[in-house]
Amino acid sequence: MNDDQEFAVRLDRVTRTYGRGSTEVAALREVSVAFRRGTFTAVMGPSGSGKSTLLQCGAGLDRPQAGTVSVGDTDISRLSEAQLAVMRRDRIGMVFQAFNLVPSLTARQNVVLPTRLGRRRPDGARVQEVLDRVGLTGRERHRPAQLSGGQQQRVAIARALLSRPDVIFADEPTGALDRNTGREVLTLLREAVDDHEQTVVMVTHDPDAAMWADRVLFLTDGRIVDELDRPSAAQVTARLTGLDEGKRR
Ligand SMILES: Nc1ncnc2c1ncn2[C@@H]1O[C@H](COP(=O)(O)OP(=O)(O)OP(=O)(O)O)[C@@H](O)[C@H]1O
Image (cartoon, rainbow, N blue to C red; front, side, top):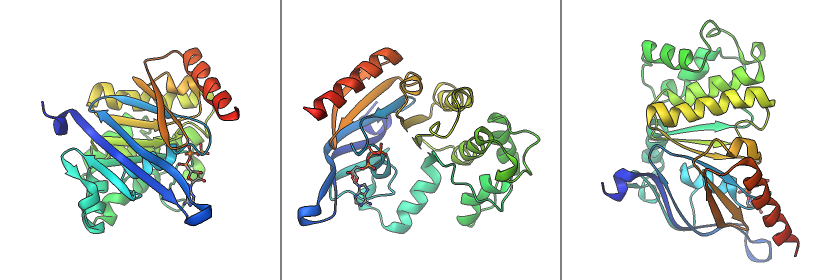
């Protein structure tokens, strides 16, 4: 297998800075990391360490000043905005802490919205399949306000799954949920990896959520400073405490 088939997404020496001159902040400093197909990676680190920026650059929502981002065999820094939009629609799914649903639309309409915006006709059977898969059978016509937080996040996951994306980027997907509901969301993300060979990259502050991942990356000041394979929550907590202490010194 060559690298393009083995890895869903690769960042190579990616640098992203914000602002200029004395207010310049380096959110990512020459970060190189590859996400193997069919794996679940958690990204952790102190506030402001660059986690969301890593996700945004990987998903093509933000463009780095230097370095390359590849999705499969495509270097996305070379794509036009229009080509990038198609790539994001077809191959990348996004899930956010705040669900990002349209309040006036039903669950089903929210799931098909990206397809409709792409001026394509949704496949009704596929839409029902993803709604069933995330446990929303019977709630297809509910609007977000009529759903619990966990159910709203399921709608967002169904929306992300619809196009069978290679990779799903999730930015604190359990951050607004209680522990049990969060666990249900993590189960869905884990199933995407184990049963559907998708790739999940998830930012989280919660060591219990990170435990669901195959690998945990630790960021500090825009750099990946460590990684752990299948760690326990206690190992994750210990590593995070070490990072915070390192920062204070
Ligand atoms: N649009 C922006 N304009 C200016 N600075 C930004 C912007 N986005 C991020 N930054 C800065 O880049 C750095 C990294 O931000 P980022 O949001 O990636 O961190 P994070 O690890 O996700 O933080 P948190 O855990 O608090 O969400 C921070 O110092 C932040 O202030």
